[in-house]
Image 1 (cartoon, rainbow, N blue to C red):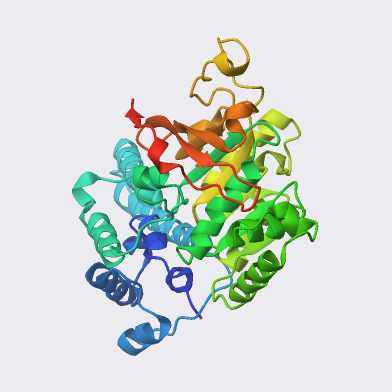
Image 2: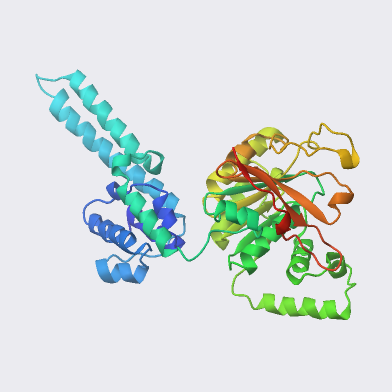
Length: 422
């Protein structure tokens, strides 16, 4: 029967990402007795090659017969840490009693000092990646370096707009992307653009969760962008003969793709817990939550607190599995000090207007805003404000807003503004 520590390694192998191992911090102390040989082999393989060994290789080289587990690696890691704490505390108490509390020479003050120091050391050890001593960081740094070097030929998740892709260098696990705008500002279209680029260009598997729009409408919109056809023509069966042939051609190509693109009704993933379970099942490379402010919470009924709690849960549990994009609403139209119409000044490029919670901006690695009011200038193009970049960047870039004979939200690169770093 496998121990919790062995199950942890098995689950890490099943998840298939070195990052799973790296983010948990030092775990060597969890392997006792004969298991130390298993960990030494596993650790050496990751440091040398920057990849995880598979089950067959582990069995052939160590004799340990690991197998895929039903729970995520973090579940077995918690069990292994609890077991280690239990063993360590029992041994510590027995040692302190024997050395400092038993017999005529008992020294309770010394016992208290020994217990305090030992418990503090255990606490630091148990917190893993949350506490790191720079003097002991060599293994973590080298493992991350080797893993990145093995993956040097690929970029992280790209969103399909050159300004952002150059600025971020690609997004990865742990990143939360926020897109805010007023109702009907185009948030769903832009979220679909990101997801389609990840799927069609990078070969990544998106999970698109729509909290407001039914899956049929979502896939029709997706097809409009993918096939470069007008959405209304697809929805209303009003395509020309040439456009109809183009639609069928793209649909045939799509059906032959080896990479899934899951579109989910929000009723199936109404809470972060539901979404987490779905992610564990489908294993997406990119998660998109359109209308994240509508997610439910098991205990919180106040809307403002609920959104803040869910934003934190998304960051902790969903971003931990894959980079995650969420759409939010502005609480009110962006403030302006100018007049109306063409003389209106640009709204301030801040995230203060995002509705419900300041936590959204704080938790986002990248925050974008659709802040332009409807006007003659925004019929064919829209400005996307960069409210927050990973390194403090702000600025904007312009995208097409075309629904007539094609559906196009590509960046108008010749009008890209230079980014400023605060």
